[in-house]
Length: 380
Image (cartoon, rainbow, N blue to C red):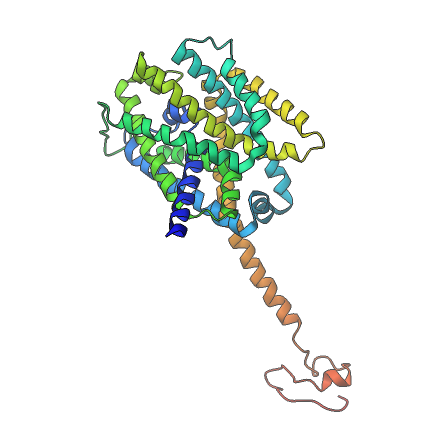
């Protein structure tokens, strides 16, 4: 019984980590959701995204378990190009860290009236990351275990509001374009979560955590979009669409706090590969300070600008990454089988009729020629 409860608790904890890697500034505010999801037919699109997220998480769990974590997956899938792919992942994580810091500034500005020119909260969080990044996956798990339940409760609260979840039977515009945007959205999130997901897979996380997280994310996408699209064009075009949909007052302050929680969870997950790489340097504290400073400076672009300029490109990179992870192991197994067959054929004893100068010992071996399956003795 205790073992079963322990496994269930581990599954829920891992699911919270997965949710925390996705529900960042762009998600909770709705900025990235209105960028990738159509204004009509968004409910089935949200559930399609949940299915694709499950497949992506499950694939990376399996690869992480098979190759001992993220670095092993990169070596197995990309071979000599693993180092280049890892640097690209690090740069992408830097962009997401900057986006989360920009999101904190937007939350403080629109939720509490603090000017973006005074990035008090983002600067404080940079300092916290500098000292807490050495905690690794344990630190990420603890942060998500505390904050993700609050975020999910807020989403349930939104689901109880007066909103329209109706949708047309055909999406507005090209259906292929809507599906392509969903692929980009899923590819981006799974790609950016890959370091954490693969390392969780190496520690035994599996389909249960992937399923719970994907269902929670799909439900949250549908509820947040329903609130935004019910509010209309002003909310859709806002820097933080969900905040605009909720209006001012206490709801805005609650949203600001929950958004900050979502930003913190994603910020810790995004910083995970950067912090691990910094620890490999001769002076890790100096490297951490430089990288955090670069993320802070990049965050000055603002939340909406980062989402609009970088996220579609990261989504395309994510789709390519997932396709490589799905296809390359199968191709490598196929090549391994062919190589094994070739080596087995080379080990076969040569026929004396073909190799006339073989030694006496070799000529006494069984002939593998189909028409001369006999032992040969004496000189040829």
